Length: 325
Image 1 (cartoon, rainbow, N blue to C red):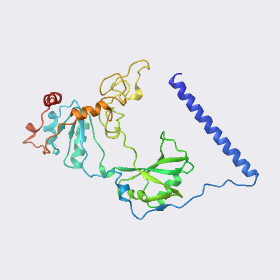
Image 2 (cartoon, rainbow, N blue to C red):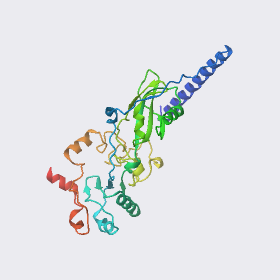
Image 3 (cartoon, rainbow, N blue to C red):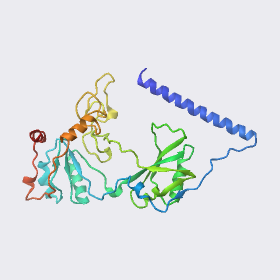
């Protein structure tokens, strides 16, 4: 059976189940009304917060480091060609570290980071970076809440306890939970006020367990490279199916045609979990062990007009590594 027909069949089954559930609920309500019994809402319990956050619980989340995020130039980019122009603009940055996939650049201040990314945008140089750490969010998974609870009610209850909830939604997972509970993902500011959510022990009468979300490898849906998201990516647009320079939604590849990876150029999609460039795959771990994907780290030296000609050279990284191996 074609994939489209299978998807349609699954969708139809879900719609039928929803219809049957709604009809059953309506029939029960009608029967109760005939017996002069009004359906009772779910009883609401108390919400209990501890006086302090448990250190062991807080340690499960990574500490927020207020440092300037790095900028990663996508290869191939002859960065040496732009160094003098960047220095003339008064932008301060440290000696770049060049690897097989990226050239890593660290700026001295957040303002230098902003000006350098603006320059790369103007020159249409492909790169990616990360957001300002002061604007970073904290994500908390809440376990132990029944499916029948309303998300808006949960959100209002948390807000009434001085917890600044930004977003709250039900998580879709493959876990089988026999207690008819759900997983709720809460997003709060990564500051002292946001951390108050870790004090919650009981929510609307239900004991809850708080934990960080699972750390999964990130893939950019813009350039198809791994390790970052598309929000701060300014790299070359690539298709996950055919590897060409267009968005995946606009791909015209036929199902019978072989895919092509945008990263390794092999005959699989760029999202293939066993690709040599996919973080967590065996080949990726092997290349990391051999040092083929790690940048060539150099001492942290501020680039100036006096030393820029000797600090950075666009050497052939592959040949250099071959000799050292």
